[in-house]
Length: 131
Image (cartoon, rainbow, N blue to C red; front, side, top):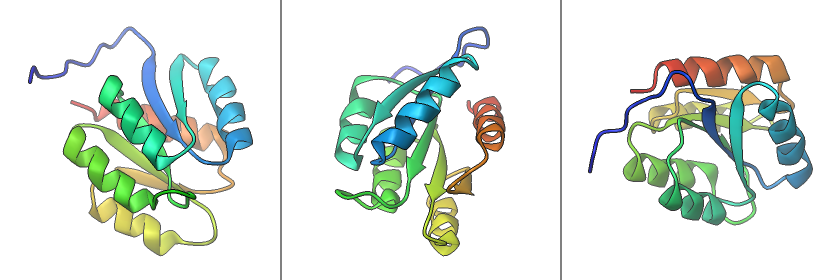
């Protein structure tokens, strides 16, 4: 498999995985104004199918979803694309689960509701660390 090369000029390619469609749609719309090209997935299963079809620089992954646990999705993501930078999103006061995500390869985490500017900064930081 050829090695991925990061392009500095183009938009950051972001995979946003969250089963709260309203949240995902608002975040995606706001991100598009920041030179971030967002692809949305509303379930773990949809996220895995999406990652099979395209390459992404960064993924923002919700921990609590209806169909699959975010940690399980993270583990599969890291097998499919070990270089993918993943930021975990967690609500429900489950910072322990987010820390578990770091153990399995996530680069960072945020608790929901999160500050939009902080999320953008974490995405940019994750993208710069991408190789």
